[in-house]
Length: 83
Image (cartoon, rainbow, N blue to C red; front, side):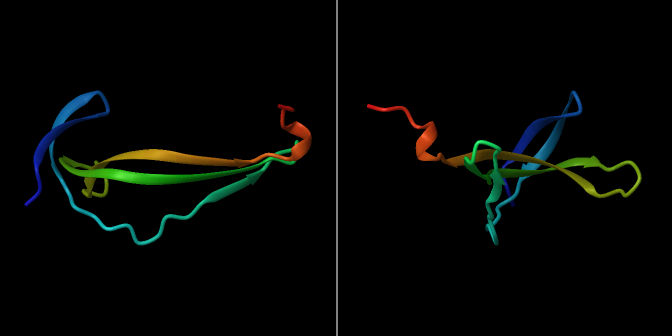
């Protein structure tokens, strides 16, 4: 049984339960910019809450997810400032 909590869903405070999870795969999204910089972004989930609310047409539980974006940039030498 997870920790009972409340979260805001669509402007409404609803009850929910924090659900334990295990990451299976956390991939990077990679983007090449026109200036030859490569940006890598990965979303890392820190908390998942299953609310008591239901999707109106599918009747699935609605989840609230807390996450953080991790960003890395590979910048070409021509864009780096001299020291």
